[in-house]
Each structure stands twice: as structure tokens, then as C-alpha cells.
Image (tube, rainbow, N blue to C red):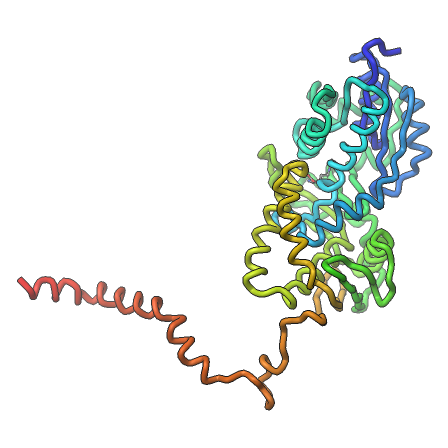
Length: 409
Ligand code: ARG
């Protein structure tokens, strides 16, 4: 038994965190309490508990955080059109601060002196865990065995075998991170940036539906509340959209991503619901927000996504931005219809009672209320400086300038 007290380990049941249990016991002489936080990863949590105890955890805590994840992390991200580098819907990034917060709660309750996670020193997750843990309880010592010992997956695999720690077949092939908002697939042959991810890398995406299909999403104040005419709680709605859009091949993201620590990595995600919902949300915003709101909010969205990605969820700027974003969402109410086919996604219709699109202004047909006479003067003033700049530049190249100056001599 550990004589250095208790440590709470954020435990997923995967390879990294499983070998951590054993390292914490043997090298740090700590009693290990494992915490598994359910953010919709759809795992067999009974099995995970069994596994933790079999490896040596003295206690295991399961936390169902799905509601909280949806309400306090996913909804703000939808409102912020949360995409890192315009591509990645932040699924892993959003879950980490919540998992860290739950682990701290357990550590406080159990009187632990240390808190641990299974992150490597190469990724973003270590930042998200460390910063949240320190922000919420700076007294806890943070231990990250994989990072501390500079371990590679192969060494971990060998250690696991020696120590009789079971490894799943999937872990041998890829490293997966799954939650309600998306799934990241890493490792194996996917690390070759030119290698196309094979179909077996995906769980939601298949091409069961070959013909085009539609999905209709309804939003209230920036939050999706109904899909295909049925109102449902957000968790159910996300699962519904994941399944449906997935069968049309929608939601694969394959890009080169800049990690906070400077490494470029090839990332493969599948997030049918996140991609579809954000696409619809952005489109609805374009209909109800002014062009000034849209231009400013685009910068805010980008900054918000960067804070979430880079592990600064706890920074007050994030909540400051949330307040601005919430204020813009009051009118983001309405319906969006999207068409999907073999991986393509396109908004084909939108409507809102707060729409700023006025057909009588926009129409080219009879009955327009737009007075074209007003345009003439406006256009003249709008282009004023551009026109002057062109004539000044033309004078400079034709040598007019020199002539007049020289002529005065
Ligand atoms: N690159 C993504 C991020 O930093 C996903 C990482 C998922 N992988 C993982 N091992 N947690 O959020």
C-alpha cells in the first residue's frame, strides 16, 4: 500500500492511464483513486471500473457529466461556432477542463495530496489538465507519469504486457478519444500525412445512404432544440445528428493542426453532429445578425476557440467573451435545412422571425421598396478615395509630377 497518501487519477481505461495506475503505486508509493468522467464516450464503464481495480486502484469513481458537458461546454461552443483553425470542432479540448474539474472535486473530497493524468508531454491535453487543476486547487501536486518518464507508446505497451495490464485491440491500432461532440483518431498509419484514413478508422461515418438526404435543424437563442421537426434534449439531438449525417458520410475532418507546443500534427476527426450543427448555426447567424455584428463576432469566435483549444478555459477572458456571444444569440432563432450526399453538406434553406433578409428590398422583381436613386450618391462617396488614389498613381507613372515641378523652375 502507498505510504505517501492518496492520488486521484483521471482514468479513461486506455493504455496511457492504465499504465499510470501501476507507476503511481510502485514509483510514487501512492494509493490510487481512479475517476472516470462520462462525457458521452459510450464506453463500458463497469468494465473500466473492473480494470482499474484489477490493476490496483483502491477506489473507483464514475461521474456522469454528460448533461453538464452538453450544457456548459458544447452549447457555448456552438454559439461561438467553435472551430480551431477553422476546422477542428474542439471535442477533446472541451472535455478536458470538465474532466479535470471533476477529478479535483474527488481529490478534495478524498483528502488526496496529489492529482494525476496520463498525458504525454507532446500534446495539448497536458496544458488543459494542468491549468485547470492548478486554477481550481493549487495545493494539489500534479503527477503526469507518461510525461515525467518521457514514455513512448511502444514502451508503455511492453510495460503493460510485463505487468499483465490488458490492452484493447483498438489501442494496438489507433489512439482514440471520443465524446459526445466528436471522435479523434490518432496514431498508426494515420501519422503518415499522405495516407488516406481507411474506413475502419471511423465509427459514425459510413456511406449507407448513397442518395441525397435532408436534415432540418431548429435553433432557439443559438441553441439547437429540434431536429427534423422533433424537439429533443441536446444530448439526444447530437446523437441523432451524428447517426444521420454519418450515414451520408458527413463530418470527416482531416487536417494539419498546430499544437500549442509547436508541433504540427496530422489530425483525423469524425464529428458529423458538430460539423452539421455549426454549419447551420453560422448560416442562421448570417440571416439575423448585422454585418457589423458578424464581422466582430468572427474575431471573437476565433479567440474563443483559441482559448478553448490552448487550455485557457479558466481564463476570465473566456467568460467575458461568453457574455458578448450570449448577447448576440438572442435573435439566433429559426430553422435551417441542409442537404447531404456522400460527404458533402450544404445549407439549402433558412428562415427566422428575426430575419434581416427582406425580400421586398432584395427582389429584382416588381414591388421592390428599394429606391435605386439613393444608390448613385452613395456609390460616389464610397469609392471616393480609391478613385483619387488611382488618378494620383497614374500621374506619378506618366511623369506628370516631375513635369509640373520642373516647369516651375
Ligand atoms: N488534437 C486534438 C486536440 O488537441 C485531439 C487530440 C485527441 N487525442 C488525444 N490523445 N487526446 O484537442
